Length: 412
Ligand SMILES: Nc1ncnc2c1ncn2[C@@H]1O[C@H](COP(=O)(O)OP(=O)(O)OP(=O)(O)O)[C@@H](O)[C@H]1O
Ligand SMILES: [Mg+2]
Image (tube, rainbow, N blue to C red):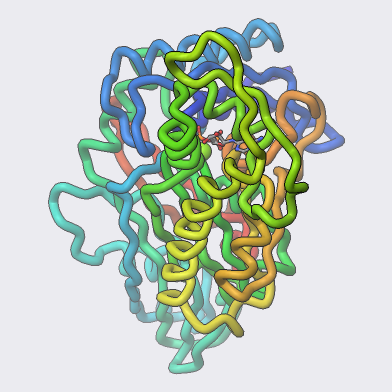
């Protein structure tokens, strides 16, 4: 198996760092190694301690290498955090004289023009995601190639991150002994793994509920229209439980996973959970409904924050595909119902699709990002006729940050 048939992905999460290795074969993307380490040095998606984060990356990479017997020298890396912002931009170019038909080069120039939007000097463009084309005034063109016309415009969604946040991620990966093949916004990778083409066309919201943040990507009419990072995630639920139950975080986390629920009244009144609060020698019985009493308000707050972002993006009728919840936080029992109630949109929990092998290791919602990164990397390997991507230079002068979604590739 040659290097070019292999794909390596690295998800730097707030709770876990996950490395996955896959091979492209006749059956698609086959996962051959997965390694996971407890995250450290990363808070709310941002690197806060380079050495400790690099340690966690090296640990996850080692485990994936051991499992697969394949060395990892570079990876497609997911990026997140509150330093990420997005804006819309428009690029306008004249279609090259002579052929009066839109060609690859024209589309590339239009996207480059959209990319030339003014971005503060402390930020870099991570992605330029084309939304729609306009040819000689005719809006809503999804596939511009081959169309007749003289003036080509593109509306694009531009995602930027601060130089420092991007450089710190690259430093961590280098320190762990790897190069960065590509930097991809984590929620775009998650979306790549959990939604289908039809949902994308109908309009859908992907919410990746991680440990420290909830990351949103909103799609309508086949393209991305809004992204947001909400600085609240599953760890806040565990934190609330630790306070409410007067126990340590570890006990709170384990109790949440085993017995946590958002909806009190769906639980039997006599159901009890055994746990040992701080300062107690013996476990005590706590009604399961009491856990829900603590979890419920936080879950509703998170759903409310999601609803506010969705409102900013457009009316509910724009999103018949509803809300697709993924990330480990989506496993919280009753949360999908709370999101449905608060947003008045259909909601479902989704696990990643589109790879096979290692089902036990990589099939949960908390693996959506790493699976999406694998798919992203595989697409890069397969090559594209048009490279219309946001590019960021890394420390070695290599281009990084050159991915964009399947939904956009489809446009060309
Ligand atoms: N069975 C479960 N029930 C409820 N919550 C769960 C369950 N399993 C995991 N979680 C929660 O999911 C969160 C971690 O999710 P995930 O692994 O997707 O985060 P991450 O990618 O490390 O973080 P981030 O994306 O915020 O950087 C934690 O808060 C954890 O408590
Ligand atoms: Mg995550």
